[in-house]
Image (cartoon, rainbow, N blue to C red; front, side, top):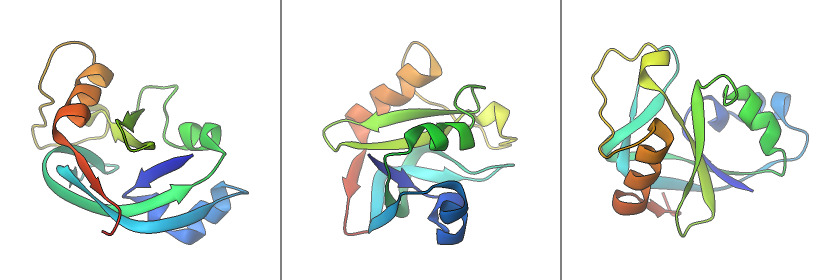
Length: 125
């Protein structure tokens, strides 16, 4: 599985401590999302953000690391790209900046809609 990473998981030492089987693909850039800082970084609508493509079959370990089961982050797929990414819930991450995901429905549904309509991936970074 390919995952766009933009925070702690861009550090090879951190990834190596977490995963047994992994490799980095190319540097990449998401257009239509920007990084926002809090206790942990997350993404929000707007501008662009650089990162890496992490390739691993160990998605369950990444879900655990990102706190998916506890609702800290959601894992969503970028439509048409075969790449997933983790987006944190701003209120749970200590983000002081107001972050608004447009649309209706749950947080995960609004993020997914925005990704489908507004976000593009440039694998050349």
